[in-house]
Length: 199
Image 1 (tube, one colour):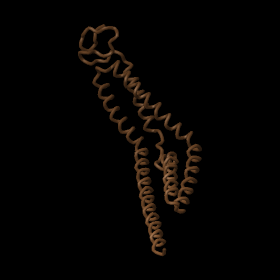
Image 2 (image 1 turned 45 degrees about the vertical axis):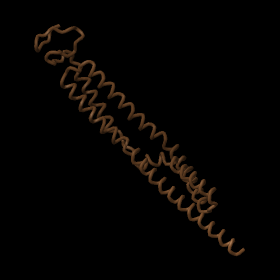
Image 3 (image 1 turned 90 degrees about the horizontal axis):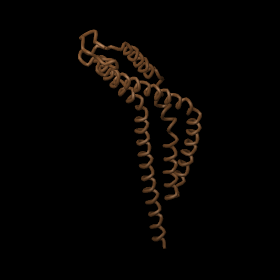
Image 4 (image 1 turned 60 degrees about the vertical axis):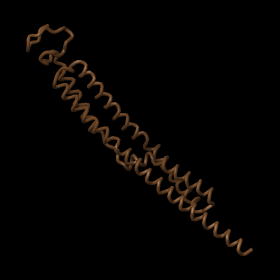
C-alpha cells in the first residue's frame, strides 16, 4: 500500500503514515466523535450536592461522636455526656435510615460516572494504539486527559469537603470531652478535699 500524500510504502496494517502523519484508515473521525460524546456524557451527569453526599456518609461521624461521649460518660459519670451520647445515637439511626433510602440513587450515579470514565479510557487507548502517530489524535488525547483530571477533581470535591467537616466536628467533640473530663475531675477533687477538711 502506498501513502496517497507522500508516496511512502505502507504495510496493510498501517493506519497512519509514519512519515507524513496521513490517516489511511478513515475510522479515526468516528473514534474521535465517540470520545467527544463520552466526554460530554460525563460532564452532563448530575452532580451530587455536598449536603446529599455528607448526609449519606454522616452516620460514620455520628457513630464516632456517640462512642466518644459514651466513653467520656463512663470515665466521668457526667449525665450531660450520656444525654449527648443518646442524642448522637438517635442522629446515627436517622442518618442510616436516610442513607439506605437514598443509597440506590447514589449508587446509580456513581455507576454511571464509572461506566463513562471506563468508556473514555477505552476509546483513548484505542485511538493511541491505532492512530498514535497522528498529531490530531495526540492533541485530542492530551486535551481529554487534562479535562478528565478536572472532572475527577470536581467529582471528588464533595468527599474532600466532607472529610474536612468530619475532622472539624471530631476535633470540637474531643475538645469538649477533654474540657468535661478536666472540669468534672477538678470538681470531684475539690469535693474530696472538703470531705477531708471536715473530718
